[in-house]
Length: 404
Ligand code: NAP
Image 1 (cartoon, rainbow, N blue to C red):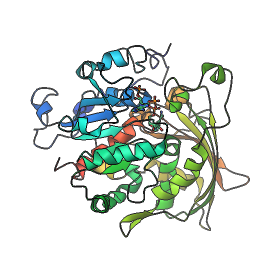
Image 2: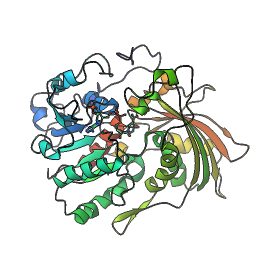
Image 3: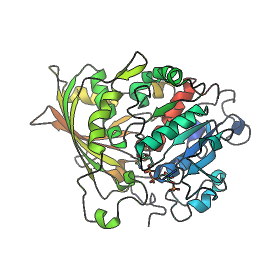
Image 4: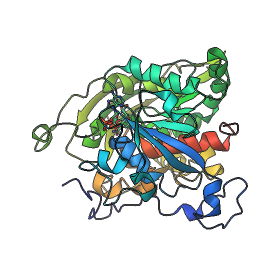
């Protein structure tokens, strides 16, 4: 049933990595050079750790024909190690009909052995799920120590003070902390950069846009309705998900309440200092949707309060460094506002801007706070693999991969 799950979704059409030709050139490669052939020589070789999982598979699919990156290394648990990728995912390939040809016959390595990746890739995306966070933290550090930068989706390093937790539109300036991180560890080429939790990406850009426009946000109440793919594969048992809502996701509310403070923080003395606010109260639920996290958000502003018209103008005109740099995965419009009374909806809206937009609807006054709205983003694209790829594109554009 999950095979080809993205087909036939009405307005939520699949937009996979099909439009890279319109993106900027690779350094040293003339604009207009056809994909394949010479352009391959200019690509950075990347590895995917956790390549067999839900997020790992997204990476494999989204990196097919990427203009800057080429998957040359895949790793997962010892259970999958030693098999060809196509065999390791034979009965659990979830992203459309075909596994990308360039990856099908790569041998899956044991992700626990960082040294195996040396010489086979220049940096790795980490989409690992291990029983203990500490193990992921140590493993990501092992890759960095081997001179292999790690662009991670895992939560293990999100609270490491000298590791940037990036949403490129918001806190690109946190890249400054990487030089200190390398110095602290004595790493020459390797470093770690991470993504925040997928549910936050549903509403952090609209929040940031308002703060940047001069409107303090004092308090915020969020209820998330999170897709089943957020729990990985096979994830939550179908008996718990069909005809049901699960009103608890382990650790998620704490992440939602704390991570925004680091994202909105500033780099000081070689580490990231958290922002003082907003105060967040969240309830995180799992709902029977395959892809696309929704959040119902109420905000209280400080003394200065924007009008509804101003808010919409701030959101629809919001762009940032990824758009200025024309990064291949950057959405042209990071925030999309809809006016229909029954939008956003996961099936209809999750693919907006290649799955990279935050889609907002139902902006209205709140009887308790100042405003409320409903926001949606694609959890395995913006919230996971494509968001990770955007982080890597920012790192490349800012020269962090120049000496690999
Ligand atoms: P998943 O579907 O369970 O995949 C987990 C991956 O980790 C698989 O490749 C698995 O390999 C590998 N793995 C498991 N145990 C291992 C071990 N002992 N040693 C080495 N590798 C091991 O999980 P997921 O949903 O893709 O999530 C991956 C990471 O991304 C997690 O840290 C998660 O928190 C984060 N994340 C997920 C989402 C989302 O929407 N799903 C969003 C944001 C962040 P095998 O196949 O060989 O078991």
